Image (tube, rainbow, N blue to C red; front, side):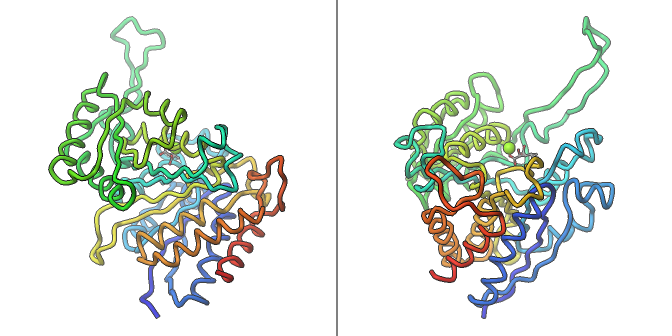
Length: 373
Ligand code: IPM
Ligand code: MG
């Protein structure tokens, strides 16, 4: 019997609660059959928190998130909240979690499962076997830089009389720490990092390039480092994705690149993510795990959502927060097996057919495959 791991579950909005229910099945199974023990608490984030408390994240939930071994989040947002003030929009809850927990390294693996290679918008031979990892800086850059805001601007010949401001700002320390995360991860993979910025137009991009190179030269000389302008990088990603191993990039470019990478693999409903910060007292990093997909309000509540991205996010938690690599491997293999057997939620249903299942049936199948492994 191992120690108990504390886990805060924040299902969020839209399909978030449905996919999270399936993760809880996996957790229950691991507790009952693999001797793992989780101390689980639940909370609200995003629109559901706004509905209950008038804020997308309460201070109490924030404090809980700071105290646990890991946070598992579903998704936030929905059209119902479109007209809310910017400061209380669902996304602000997620951004506060990332910022206050200082989760600076966002890991977004994009793996193409063989059973789904035909779902990609690219040809099978371009994406088959694809396995890349995007490391996105998550707590700085234009998402958080000051000054920011919308102000009156009547001093110039400005039709409309307003100005909108955001600031791309990176310190050398912020760049170095996320670069270290990328190099560490590359060491466990194929030892290749490609860093992306816009050093041709942005000073922050020049600094990014110099600092990443500095970390590589001084601390990771065995890792192969290349640099690309982010626009070319995105083009290369859809042209020949297999050339990449780890992609390291800033907050905004990482947002764009990871959506594109997700589509390469065929379904946004498949991709997990981990957001990691500094080590806590127990040596494990502060951590939040969430699927890359959004809250998909158009299909919420219909049993159509694909729970795999959220389940694979929990697999990342097993690996990075709970040191349960074997359980993580087993869970990933169970997902692969179910897909290879042709079990399909609606988003995965292609011309070749398969067994159509609901969100809940997909969870059951994965648990059953886990039990057989
Ligand atoms: C993501 C999302 C978020 C982001 C939104 C929901 C704030 O697009 O995690 O990629 O822009 O970072
Ligand atoms: Mg995004």
